[in-house]
Image 1 (cartoon, rainbow, N blue to C red):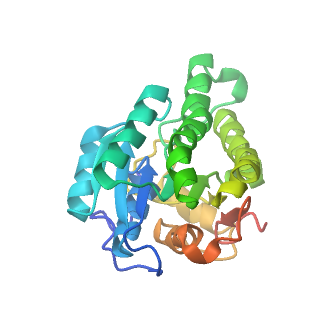
Image 2 (cartoon, one colour; image 1 turned 90 degrees about the vertical axis):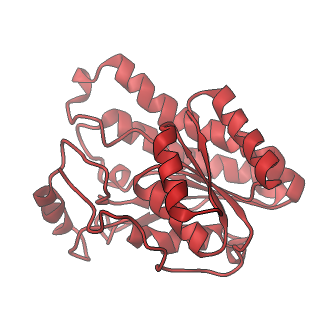
Length: 265
């Protein structure tokens, strides 16, 4: 079982950026992994993170780690009603929505197998969460961002798309779609002052266990990178905060690979 170097989670002492004070940042999939680290980072910059996760207990736990600045909302991003309720709850509690970090995805529980062995129900669930969930969450926050004339949407794809990684075809298909969606969303939302960008993390070691990836596997994978060490969520925080900041208002439709040069793109 792989575990993060710091099992107690982010300490809030990582990269910080100005201009995020008082901004309301929704983090889907914020109950664990990269989403959890992003929620802590937003709080450290003075933003008000909303931890949205299908597991309400995990969302509440992360909110408890952060403190009064955070709000936890149990949310299934694949359910339109649940996502609309999330936006409504945030607007009632915080009065605004400035940032959406679309981190919710199915990956760690997937078993590696040839695509012809992937059960159709599993394929559909991955697409429902990773693709449709990204669209639904973004759609739900657009009215508030349009009204404000400002917004930041940060989608999460995967550097595994660049590699054409095998035996995860549903995951690769879903994360490839996210890149295309980012470009189209940027076109449709630019007139409203909403920037939409995407990050492509590499093989990132978090506290989330993966049956198909061992610590030794992470170390071996790191040897294929320019920076030969295992990636952690801390390696992504600077890029996430950069894309969320007011200083990147003319950057949109971009997909930034943050994988230590593993795919060298």
